[in-house]
Image (cartoon, rainbow, N blue to C red):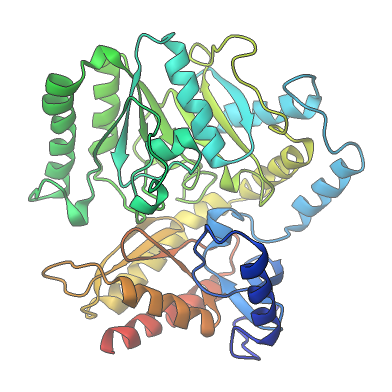
Length: 444
């Protein structure tokens, strides 16, 4: 498939017809970035219902890490579908679940791990919340998470989240016992630090000197939930000293460390999991999105000692679906063919390119990221750093019309997350279009 190739200015007539029906028939509790109506996809190219072809710069929200309809994944799905589609793992057994768990415990950075399968990222964080509280048998009711984080939209995960007020508006009271602390966002450090490293130190000191000394004793805190790189919150990479310092803080007080790798996992950052960039060893890892190439699936992997909920305390009907696990095995096989390392290399080249080409654009505050988890933060003014929300909308819409599909994150960040298997030529063609679009919107 050649891309980008725009035959009809999107949205075309067929797309508009479907969008109109969608608005009539579906609850509009989600916000779309632009009116893309997908017909089919292969690797990093999508075709819409009007015959337009696009370069996919979001991977279905960081899900299709091995691209769309990878032949090995499709074959694995077909083969498993011919055997059996479902037989609840939480009531019975099948070999595929054990095989997939062996793979997970080998690649996830958890020592002596055990697995619980879920159906999504939000469900993985719900499960992790129960696991860390359950491990202490109710004696440590408090949990810490970070301002700017996003962990999902069901009640427990929504209560952990703090990236946008709309996620929680109308739904209080929320799950009690969750304390939010500032994330060390280098470009917008909440402590007005003079360097990223100082921002991290001040974030850690805030937890120790203010939360633990004045708000809640650390002996009452069961877990700390952290996205190693903020996803929905703006693709924010923390200072290098932050996660090691957070791990030391957790160990000092006997608090379990939970890394939410739902968006940053399975090679997206150029490591299998983002936490590996900083060499930390979490107690529990929450997974989903890229785990199964687009099928609904997730998991938590935790230390065997911690994964100790009693029988009947937690289960589900569809977690560990055999078709999804077959897709997972095939996806890991594909990613193991050098694509994780390739994402690191090409991601660095992409970030360097964006920094170079956008260095003189006043509307660009910062380019950041690791691997194929890249953010370009837009601002109205580099001095005030006022978020450029309307400009973000314009950049995304115009990129869509030109055949490239980035999305937004945070207050005003262009989120670039192509499949790890994207052809190099397509990657830089898409980046050129995004750069041109940002420049034009900046001038306007």
